[in-house]
Length: 106
Image (cartoon, rainbow, N blue to C red; front, side, top):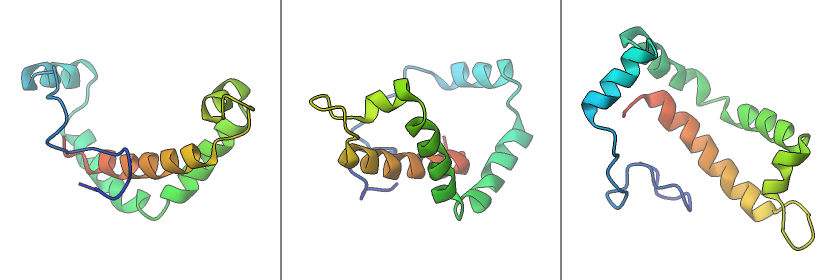
């Protein structure tokens, strides 16, 4: 678990327990055809993604920045300028989320 990213609480004991049971989760995986090979490849992706996370985030930020209705959610309400503190925090959390997801330790 990464604890140095403000607002990123993945794995924290303080989080509410998921309402999705393990049986429900197994059914969701079956319904989406998400099998053992998918888990294996997802885990393999971690080593590939760990050195490319910043580039992925650059692409995502470029997309958000060029899409006015999305950019709106990353701006200061008072003047419509980008909220750089929020954007920086989101970037850290999203980057860590990419790596945590790739570990497939759910």
